[in-house]
Length: 182
Image (cartoon, rainbow, N blue to C red; front, side, top):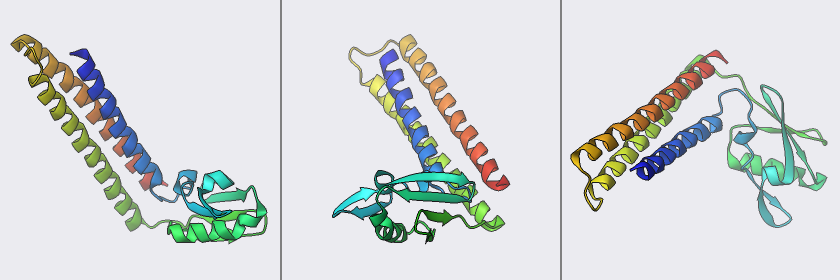
């Protein structure tokens, strides 16, 4: 039974990682390169991501700087950022492009917390679905499991599920607290 539990645990860990990725994409007032690194830019007739054509840096908590490797791409990078609708306006000084994060209001912070909790709930639903799939898989196994083995499998799977759920709750709580104290 160990391989089925290991597979379920790996899938649950992926659900948690996906939730973390969603957290990093939130624009909560603190600058993060992940907010813009996937922006598509038309470079030399080919669509490329921003991180492929420029260096991204975070000099302070509210600023993202973009330094293109080719100075001829300034205009295309600005167009790409505006087209991506990330909510930031590029400021070009001829050497680098700056993206300044506006301060967020208390109401907006509460909206972010709601979004964070939704991401957490989505992750927990995925975890529960993975548990259900593993349980169904164990029941369809041939030869069938003995009652004792089936009970041990359920107990072990529940421990893995409980751990993943508590980790999700912990991450949601930490991110919510971070957003409210920015």
